[in-house]
Length: 121
Image 1 (cartoon, rainbow, N blue to C red):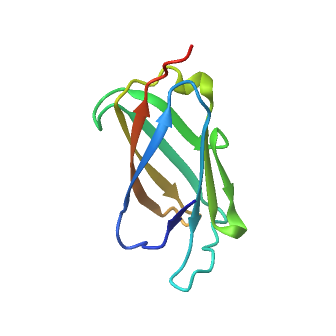
Image 2: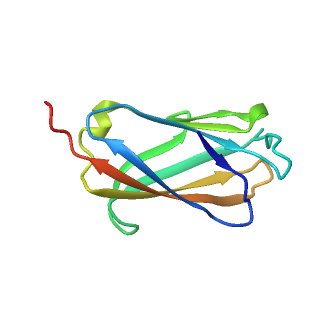
């Protein structure tokens, strides 16, 4: 479980990802009192790359790898094993941007994926 509670600072999250395995995580967006932030009308996008300026390895969007549970302030990310098989190691970078209902655009956080090479084939 990852809890994002600091909307005024862009946190960096470091995650491990195994080549050839499904990857999933759910982010919980909470206000200062711990209540879910409603995400009604928000869409999300995340590009995964070797470096910030390199080609996209995998692109995720709302409805394609990103699922939003708006009333509960939850954003789930899923990457299939068939995609992670081709991910290069040792590291990938990403960020997540949200687009709000009033055309607001927000960078929510940065991600560093540590890619664990697959040994068993």
